[in-house]
Image 1: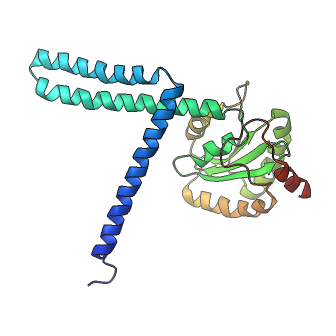
Image 2 (image 1 turned 135 degrees about the vertical axis):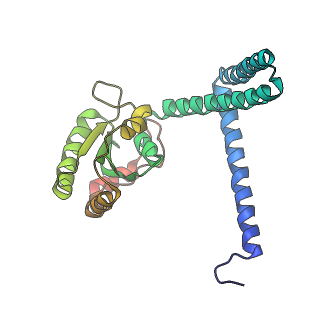
Image 3 (image 1 turned 180 degrees about the horizontal axis):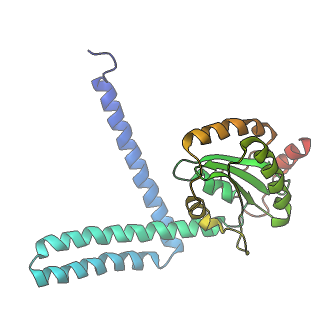
Length: 244
């Protein structure tokens, strides 16, 4: 048997693993659907309406042109796709609505970015769980602050100054999460980042990431992996910050 060629056992194990992952994804989707359905009374009507409406349109077109056998199945598929898109968007809207205003919400959004982004959460923080996160991407360096605008203003200024010393003329963007003028709403953070201009390449990203690694030793305590309810007790985190 040639070296490096997968055995039958390895192939079977890989196939079993894929099946298990697929099963887990279906279970997660079903659980998410059940949870959303309980909180969102419009979900089912909108999904069913999209499925039936698109199918009906294709049925009428099929009857007119004598292509019912082809267009009706196509309409069902497209209707199901539209229903799934509606489900996904309403779940996303619900999740962002519940997360907004909670400590760690921006960090959670950044952890779920798609694409070539290098995220370092909580590079600076206060005892009130205000925080600044750093994102390295093709636009350059983006500093994302969440918490009280008054408190994070000084954090942003400090981190921007430190970062500028190490990355030269690479662009630095700073963002404060919020709904006031000049701020970026949590639900629009990903869109904001993806719309920034491309100023550097991947090699430059690697170089910048290496230079900024030294700043990691000065970071505050790790923030929660997901949004925390307002008023949550973080005495241990606060003690860690004070010791620093």
